[in-house]
Length: 106
Length: 121
Image (cartoon, rainbow over all chains, first blue to last red; front, top):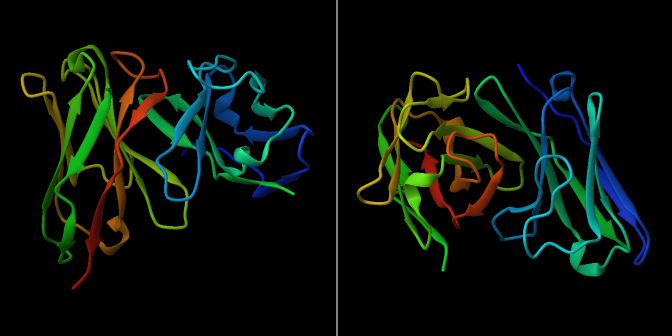
């Protein structure tokens, strides 16, 4: 099977940087994608192909991918960034989501 | 406006079937792969199935392989999920999602609001 592991939760103060990791053996050599999901809402793509931001996503969201670990970084975190975040990768014709990380802005 | 609207969810007994539909608008439907993703309330996202722009490739998660069938009708801008032999563990909110690429592997940039499936006797 294909598993992507994320920390269960991350806490960050407003204006500080939050980093969320996503690890999995089969992430190596694959693109990583990141989604934000707020309570009661559908997921929103915030990063695709490791580092790219869709139109309308703020510059404070950035991504990287090296080896078997992808990272989503939120710089200058705002209260509105409080949400669940999921990584995703594609391999052998199937997509897999990470376990999800709850980001709390304290 | 780019939009996906799911329908067809409901309460169904274990072992029975249900067919979900997703109506797409605001973009050229047959240019993109499409997917179904589900989420148990309070839990994480699970990719269920995906289909390429021209129906040539259909993929499934192991948890639904052999029971679910994905299909699309490009003339009707619609995506479907035929769910057979339903189990209690299939209970979830089912989302329809658009891929950024025609054959998949592009990430999902448009999502519907979801339709709820409850499998219970």
